[in-house]
Image (cartoon, rainbow, N blue to C red):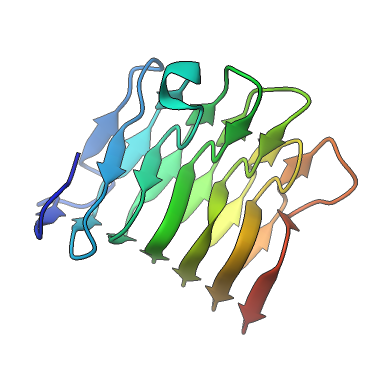
Length: 171
């Protein structure tokens, strides 16, 4: 958990530095407005009912996640899954790749890749994630996606890549 003004940066980048949840716990929690997590592969996290099924890979209530690969995480358990890859509000996600993340509650998985409100996505690729609603992104409101690619996400409802009110700018 990153709770202070600090930059947590890998030395060799995401190809060499992994935060691994072991398939049983969420990987990263960012809760400070001036906290930065940079340059990691964040994989195999799991947010269960014990964690309110929010953010299998990353839970962000503030701060910045950048130059990370968020892959093969899941949110599930309880009555809803929110953000298999990332659960975010009041946060920024920049220069990241999110793929292969999923919500595992069949009837109510929101945002296989990314779930939240009041957040910004910049220069990211969000692909091959899955959920019931918004396979790539599920927005509760005030979400901006800038210069990013959101494609090939899988859902079981009628929409495909995103759900909710999202402002796309050059994406």
